[in-house]
Amino acid sequence: VTDPEEKRQSLDALVDHVVPGRAADSRPASKKELAATAVIRLDLDEVSAKLRTGGVNDEPEDLTLPHWAGVVPVHKSYGTPIPDPGLALGTELPDYLKAN
Image 1 (cartoon, rainbow, N blue to C red):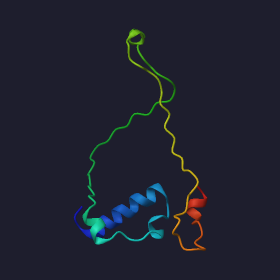
Image 2: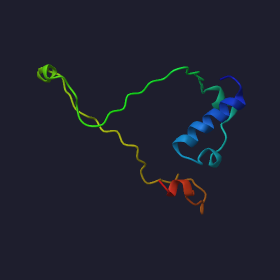
Image 3: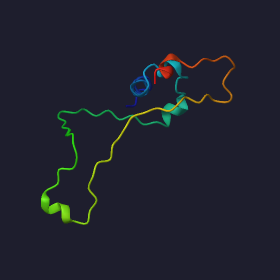
Image 4: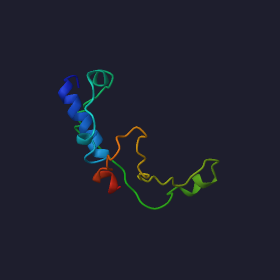
């Protein structure tokens, strides 16, 4: 993506995907920041995904191999927001951060 406005919109969409409402509550990216950030658009004609629940599903003969097998759980979670020490007095925590 080379158009600065399209790049800005793409980055805002990414930020809002992670924390809805954050892009509008942030300083817009500067020209320097936009120039230093690459955004790549991919046209996907076809995609696939594999989703499975439960534990390991190894073949019995694989269980004797010297390789670790198991499940590594992945969790999306946010910690308690910590305000910047230089934040202006009286600046309230935004609602979108209170919900997380």
